[in-house]
Length: 113
Ligand SMILES: [Zn+2]
Image (cartoon, rainbow, N blue to C red; front, side):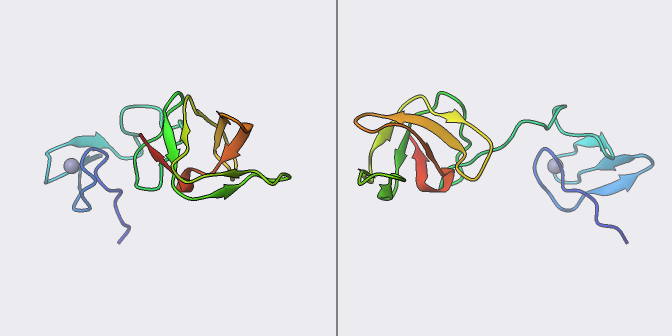
């Protein structure tokens, strides 16, 4: 038996097939197999260290001391960073930090404010 995808609305795993539809018994959501929730699922989902969704323009704080590559500077834990920009890659946050300049951070080391 193939595993059915979880409900796109409530994430319930107890979805079942009804004809060409998938049905969620928990929130009564019905959708067509293969259809994505809310149309278009292309946007990259980047979450902070505690699972908050990050978006361009968000303000975050750094949750651990981070060495700045190629310098002796350290971004101290608690540093507030405004107006982040999400990018692709290992370091998925592009930002500008006061006193340091433009740099990239990993979303796992930040927390949304
Ligand atoms: Zn559901």
